[in-house]
Length: 303
Ligand SMILES: Nc1ncnc2c1ncn2[C@@H]1O[C@H](COP(=O)(O)OP(=O)(O)OP(=O)(O)O)[C@@H](O)[C@H]1O
Image (cartoon, rainbow, N blue to C red; front, side, top):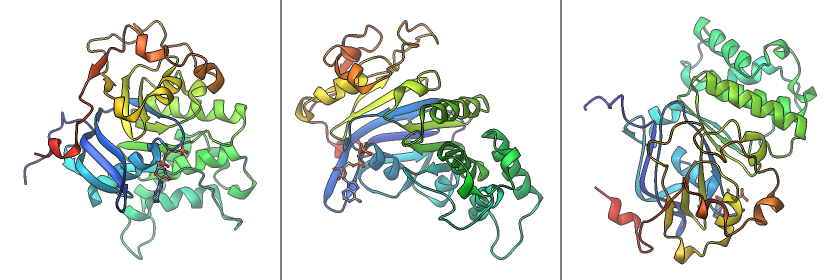
């Protein structure tokens, strides 16, 4: 087997469709995520965001198209090792007293040989992960006594302990107070500085507006925007009829970082977004809609 290309995108989907049993939830998604990118996956409730993540991880069935991680077909054992996952709404500890370090150390288990004690590399990886989320000072504390935001950071550290290339997070800010959301956003920004590639599902765009450098929007299981994070993304996606979801906004090629005048305008509140529905990304000069064909079918992408 030939070596995967080092220039390949870290994640590449071609005409990928995912679902459960007979039901196809996500249809014909083409996207690429490159090393070091910080990508938000947005969309209204039920649009298929979690299913897309789960499909990439092999936890939802792929019904068409292809998924590659690091240039290799996914899911595979190798792709799972390269992808850290922080699922939605997961709690830590389960009421049983467990230290922060013990929880994070479980992230090393897939890499360790069975029945062998943790080695130096495992301890070092756990320590690095704790430092990355600024929880090293809490390593001996009982996780059940931490705040919700701190528990999320522990879960992120657990995923990082496996030293993934791609970190996938599903609603990491959900259910935490504003201050904790701000701290978590800071954690994600710091990870990005460590060149961790991030794909994050979120409803709360505001705290992450300065963290992510690109937004994907799903509407009724189809990707309808791939480009800068601009006001109106969520509202516009809600307005789209699935049959008319022909516009995939491509990343503005050659656009210099920071060239987007709206890049730093935060979308603070869903109501505010919905008030802009119908304008938002559709009219934004840097996010030109590109017709991809309403009848596009995953089968057409098969090699
Ligand atoms: N395990 C499952 N079996 C069958 N259908 C499912 C399953 N999980 C999700 N679905 C369905 O898939 C659709 C998309 O759900 P999904 O959770 O991917 O959406 P989402 O965009 O992440 O929503 P939310 O923002 O509410 O988390 C929904 O209609 C949901 O009922």
